[in-house]
Image (cartoon, rainbow, N blue to C red):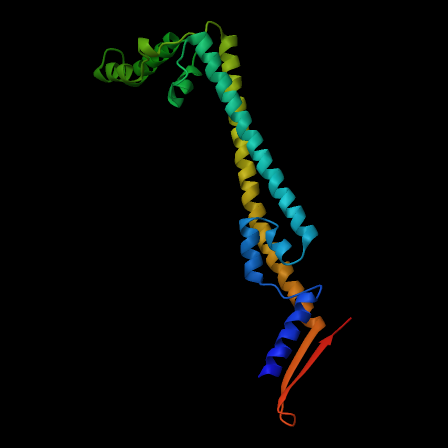
Length: 221
């Protein structure tokens, strides 16, 4: 038994000191799915793992950039609306959407009345209900003073939307990077394990004559 333990420990030492060793494919897959490149680092593919980690960091930095840009344009739009129309900075998103509809709330209400007349006919109950439901009251009234001011406000919002869309694309790229890294790492680890088994051979047989165990270890250069 002592001989067997000594032999096993010796074999473990040989494998540990080897340049290539057996690694868990499942563990490398899980690690790279969580942090791209970490599974490659675990299995000894340092260049591949470093590239995957760099790609992940670059994508995260890009995501922060687009989110910060979107917040910046959103704040600019709100400040501009506050300066020109007096819209409170804490207004909800629906109100900011309304501000982009017309140069003034009076024009907006005029469009509401025209739509009500087209749909229900002037003076009908449906007409009055429609006007009452969708018209802007005095508390929410606004006036951009010029179409140029409204255009500038819309441009701020368009830039915000553009950066939000770019951020969504980056999130998609991050998901793809995690999936690709996990699958790629699993394949690479599996191939490396196969190469390791092709290089290293271990044959353990009982040695009845010497009342022990015969162990043969081979390595292909």
